[in-house]
Length: 162
Image (cartoon, rainbow, N blue to C red; front, side, top):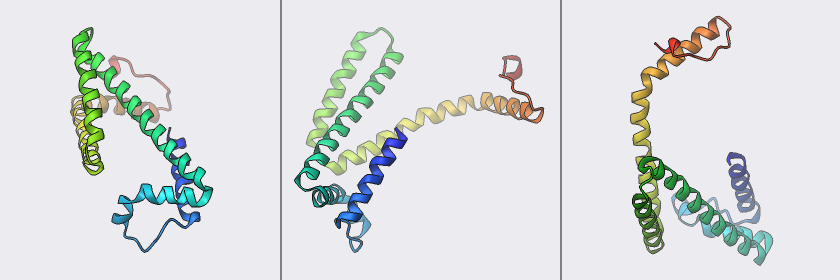
């Protein structure tokens, strides 16, 4: 995923730079608002009408696969938390579809702010879990340091973590 994302971003930047759609006189804040148009103009300048159509189809495909991926990620977490309670999973599905519908009606800036907010909120339970696991993590680090010092390759056992 990282390499493909890097390659897509690199290709986009190169098209924008070489096609003349990038204008260094435009402030970064303004350019961020018009980035999609700049990129579409760059693809159209570089590849003709096929370029603009290709970019539109690519963005739509990327958006769809991202929505599907995040949905399955979220549903698997709901199933893990709810167990066999099909009513909770069904309720989650209805809520997810509702959010998708609402998302199509809201302004793009609001969607990005909500995405940033919920991404930040996802960090909270992870931070709490890390705090609870900090003692175990410290014991594992101490075990690793001890093995490294003694030049041993040994998996930790329960006795090592006491």
